[in-house]
Image 1 (cartoon, rainbow, N blue to C red):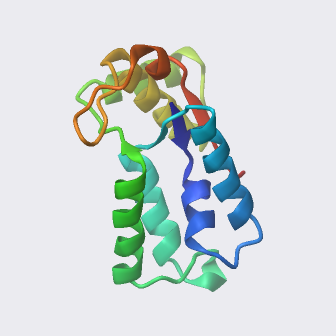
Image 2: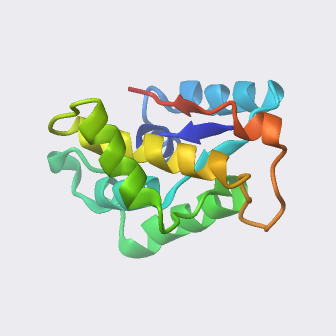
Image 3: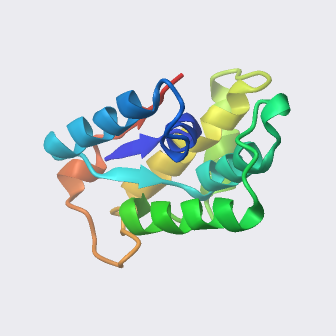
Amino acid sequence: MILLDTNILVRIANPADPQCQAALDAIDTAIQRRHVPCIVPQVIYEFWVVATRTAPSNGLGLTTDSADECVAKYLQKFCLLNDDAGLFADWRAIVAQHAILGKRAHDARLVAAMLSASSRGSTSRRGAALPRSIALKCGLLSAA
């Protein structure tokens, strides 16, 4: 299982981005290696913020309709790992145990989401359980 970072979604939403093709190639390579590309709600929230922010403010300048079309496409193409009730407790344990400060706490939430998905057998957006061997091989695919 590979968690797609927000930067990947931002890159592939903008064909003019110099890293767009590299992001698409990274996803294809992950799939060829039998990794399941996944997203979590936090990645979608972060994508929405960047996608709808103006270009002068380091955004894509998309309308809400265009941003929603991108989100719909991502939900069709990638496995959505929904948050569960234990996510907050997992996140809190990670940030406390590893003394995580500042913005890194956002990434710690992504780690908690992946660990949570692995521990519950990783049910995909269509309700099919992912093989446990794949679920335990968690990674993060980022363009940053």
